[in-house]
Amino acid sequence: METVLFVVVAVIVTAIIVTLVLKYLFNWVNINDIPSKVIEEAAEKLMKEKFDRAESEIAEMKKREEQRMKSVRRENTEHEEMLIEREKKLNKRSKLLDEKSDELEAEDAKLKQGLKSLEQTRIQLKDQLEKISSLSREEAREKLMKEIDQDLSEYKARKIRSAEKMIEAEADEKAQKILVESMQRIATDYVGETTTKVIKVDDDKVKGRVIGREGRNIRAFEQLTGVDVIVDESPDAIALSSFDPLRREIAYVAMTKLIGDGRIHPGSIEEAVQKAKNEISKEIKKNGQILSDEADWPDIDIGLLKLIGKMKYRTSYGQSLMSHTIEVIRLAEVLAVEIGADVQLVKRAALLHDVGKVLTHKIDSPHHHISGQVARKYGLDEKLVNAIEAHHLDIEAISPEAVVIYLADAISGSRPGARKDSYEQYIQRIEGIENAAKDIGKDKIDEVFAIKAGREIRVIVKPNLVSDDEAKVMAKDIAEEIEKNQSYPGNVEVTVIRETRATGVAK
Image (cartoon, rainbow, N blue to C red; front, side, top):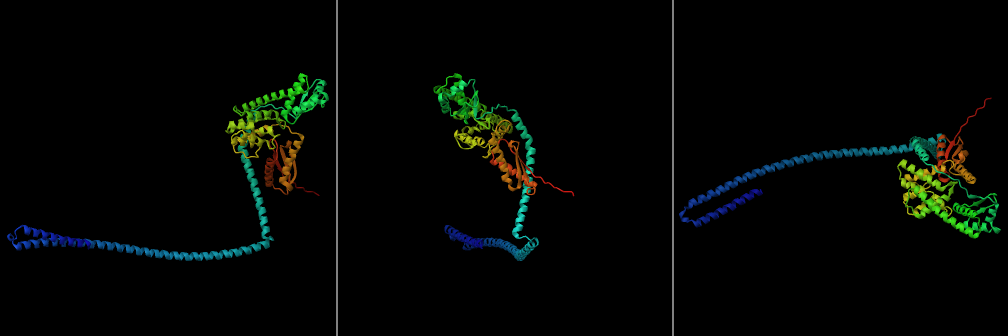
């Protein structure tokens, strides 16, 4: 309609323009020269043509508009039909959902009723079971827990056996090869030392000079060295006794010089002791250099060098600490190469693993803890410190290198003949191992025997109180208890023996 209106306006505007043009022409041309009828006919003809053309365009536009309106109405009709169809489907689906909801509510109610019925049945069955079994709920629970514990114990024992078999199958051959090759490639000399050193003398007059007038020489010597001089135990020997091996060595060197010189008096004693201290100081530095060279540590701190040099004058279970350290360095190097560990770190940790034993008379702490403190004092890497102080496994090892140090130390210490025990220490160690086993077993153990110098312990249990699987678990627990709380060289093998005997009498 807007288009039609636009066309009509255009026609009117055109007519006005034509009229104005004609009027101008009338003014320009002499009106008297043109007949008025001609002018009117021309104007009418022009106007008619314009109106005819406008009517034709209006009709055409009207036709197109009607067609467009029909198309729009047809599309609207189709959309309405589609909406009606969708509304029908939605209504149908809503009806289905309502039906399903009703069904679910009915099922829910039925389930609730079923649960209620089951609960009532469970209570009835529980009462009947208690009557039939003559057990209360608590008694039945206790019995069930015992059965579960028994099953878990058996399962644990099976898993232990399985793990041990797997570990043994995969590791024994390679481990034995590595350890045997390591030990075969290492050879060191050991000298057993005690708390005394003996100096042979050829003449009793020497003893007299050592004692001096009213014992002044021997008192001066003991005061300067801190060592006890024993002259009356053997006719041809003078014994020097001290628990400090460094003092004992200084006294030995000084006494040897005095006896060789023959002039023994407080002045010469003081001079000899001072010379002995100077010699031992040089020897300590030399020993430290030998150990540092063994560990390929040329730039070691001079304070640490002097400290490790004192290892020569320290023993453990009669084993020379310096010789033990050299052996551990060599063993650790071989083991580290075999497993691909850091060789330099391992050798340095082996050098310092027992340095704390030099200071145990000054610091009240386990020697490997002191070794760790010494390493920290000199600013060494924490990984190296852990390898040093974890070689008795009371501190967790954080690297393969720490385990290598533990193995090398254990191999060196457990080698037959490497160490000596005093009688009292031996008895304490054996009793400690046996008591550790008794604490685990308590009333279930019949007898405990430590054999092979404490390297093996055999535990005889009461067969009516311990099953085969429980015996396996007990062996594992005893081994862990001994490893955790007892001090011993090498390894301790734990064997739990369970024996059942059946006896019949023929009459």
